[in-house]
Image (tube, rainbow, N blue to C red; front, side):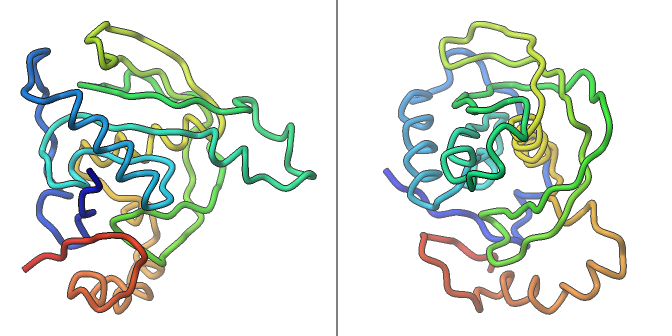
Length: 192
C-alpha cells in the first residue's frame, strides 16, 4: 500500500526514532509498504518517520541512481552498481574519509535540492528484515543515502547541513511546504 509522505514541518521528522523488537506487529507488511511508497514517489530511500512512524527503520536502493547515470558518469563511484537494503535499529559507529559534495533532495522537502557535504564512508550496525545483526562498511552514493536516511531516524534533515544564510534564503519555500502550498506527484500529508 502506498502511504503518504510526511511533509517538512511535522514534529515526527524532528524526533529520535525508537528501536523495535523482532516481533514488531506487521513488520513485513510495513517494509513492503515502505518499498512501494518509496518507488511510487521516485525516491531512493525512505525512513519510517517519513511515513509517520516513530521507529528506527529505513529502506534504500542506490542502484536506481546508477541506472540513471549518464555514460560519462559511469565508473565514477566505488559502490557501482548500488544496493537495495533494509536497515532496522541502525546505529552509525564510524564516519570515515574525505567529505564530498553531492546534490541531495528529500521526499519530505519536495522541490528543494542542495549540495551537501558528507563523509565518503560509513560503518553501520543494523538488523535486516529477518532480524539478523550486521556491521558493514558502505561508501560512495550508497553511503550518502544511508547517512541521509539515518539522519531521519535521528530527527535530522539534510537542510540542517546548510549554512544559515542559505537556509534563510530557502525559508519561504520551506514555509510553503509546511503549509501544503506545493504540488507533487505523490501522496503527502502536511502539518496541521
